[in-house]
Amino acid sequence: LRELWPELIGPLKREQGAEIVPMFRHAGFVSDCAPPYSPVAVFRGELEGTGAHGVSWSSDRKVAMHYAGAWSPAGDALVLMARAPVAAILARFEKDYEVVVDPSELLEVRPVLRMPHWQYALQPPEPEPL
Image (cartoon, rainbow, N blue to C red; front, side, top):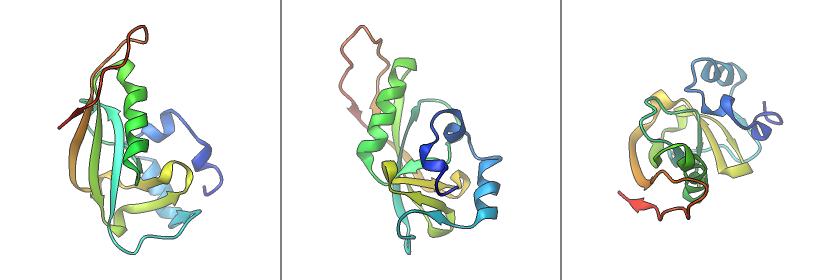
């Protein structure tokens, strides 16, 4: 997992965790950087209105803004912020400052930025603070 996960893109990382969380729990904490010893502020860019949140978050707000911007051609996107208790953190990776979490254990999940829907032919709109 330590070598494979950071290189994956797409559908697997958008999963809400039904199969992914148990896989990481079975493997134990996985990382290519230092483990956390206190809760971590995490951010995620995702389409608005998708319901449950995925497992892949970042400790860097700018990374989440990048992913929200990548989603905005498909519809309105949000940058979410949450507090991840140590027990919720399944893995950490240097690439994209990724923090893999059990989304059901996140605390204080809230939107912090909205990226309005735009078409590729148009200039992307400015993000809207929430």
